[in-house]
Length: 176
Image (cartoon, rainbow, N blue to C red; front, side, top):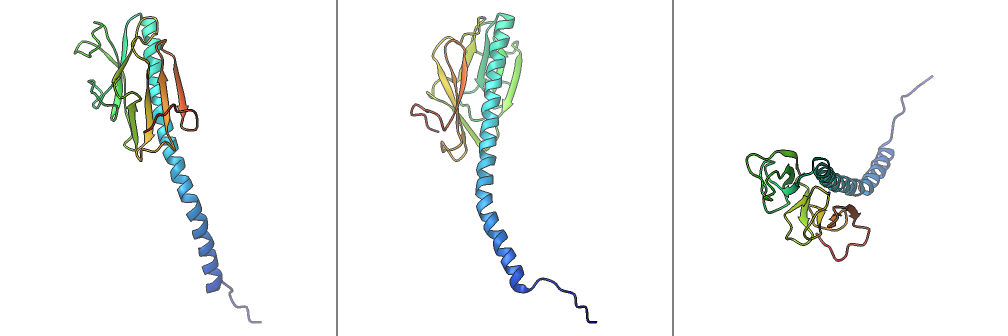
């Protein structure tokens, strides 16, 4: 009896490779979109967590707590593109000095853009009642590609309440 080893023919191998290429071609764009969405959503949740921490700390400790843009985790800057810090404003000056304690700091991923909705409010503060006096504003969190496809808006009202919207909801003419 002649038992010959059977394997794949060249045509069978080419068909399998063609099918794998088609499946990967369809799956990779969806996967990169998912990864972008996860990165933007996690940064939006970090901002919300920082703002909630600031509000609760202000209520518990009965003093002003400030959330401001920061590029180094120790001082405030004028752009939200790098990160943010939360600190106790013990002298109620609205500026971070050497004696005030930084409670929380976070640096954004490079693939995410963050900016204020109005372009003006570079810091938010919460008073001892948990209110955020001054103008209500929002922070826009977008993918580096600056599309609204995977974007979030964190909205802070004067009463200190926070809400988060994704780009599938009503954006009120906001754009990244």
